[in-house]
Length: 348
Ligand code: KG4
Ligand code: ZN
Image (cartoon, rainbow, N blue to C red):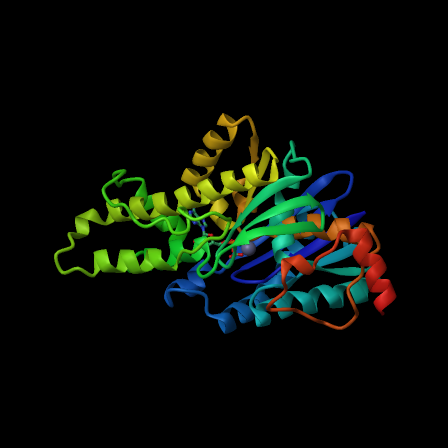
């Protein structure tokens, strides 16, 4: 089976082709960073319009890169949520229409399931069950992944996501959007221990996160009239230490709590090098293993949507003919591919 996948939930337009036997044949991506930078964040309507412009050319690029034509495609997978509703609808409309025109099935994929399954694209994929630390711009959660579609959320953030904390504090430091990678770059020139920012919820039991206090603490420092701008790198380093330290401590706590020894790190913040190094060291020290998708598959991409879509199409799962997208879609409502196919057949 060969699947074409479309991702358009936020500010990346992406198309990939995944073959069940030959693996990933193509992945094409257009980032809208330049479009949104002047506004300091993603402008939803501009995102939708740009997806519309880019989607069809990207499908052509991906098919050419895969050495495929429409006739080689056996199914289409698309991100149906969660995300920006207008942006999601552009991808859903194209995916649904192509499937109809080409006479192949389509399946709607949960964006976070895509992130969770991205490590399966690597040559040495993680075994099930494992614990996943899912850290993106919109979500921060620890999930026990028992198999594809079998997810138990162990803990999540009560307020800001880790990526949001990176982005908001970066903005306070005057860094351009998207702040996460910019802050990480500035942090590498800072000194450890110069600023100690709060690591909320670490002193309490449980696997929940809270990052909103961090931006208040940083705001207090940088808005002080006596703040020396030469110390911005030290502040950035302090912020990165607080976020990475909190994520690592809770991820280790989740391994303890579940008795599992494999950790997967997924989502855009998984591209952070200090987070990767810290977890690699800590998990290896306790005899476990940590898996990261390659950096380009940590941030939004269509290859991960293809992985989830292929599993679900293989099991006979089909999206309804109507073009539907969901801004909100709780991960806990997903079921393993075969079970949900049966459920959907029974329900339609
Ligand atoms: O998964 P993703 O691409 O999009 C969402 O689904 O949200 O994650 C984007 C988030 C942004 O908040 C971005 O600042 C953050 O990931 N990010 C990083 C790094 N690269 C991306 N945060 C810290 N360090 C990085 N190197
Ligand atoms: Zn994402």
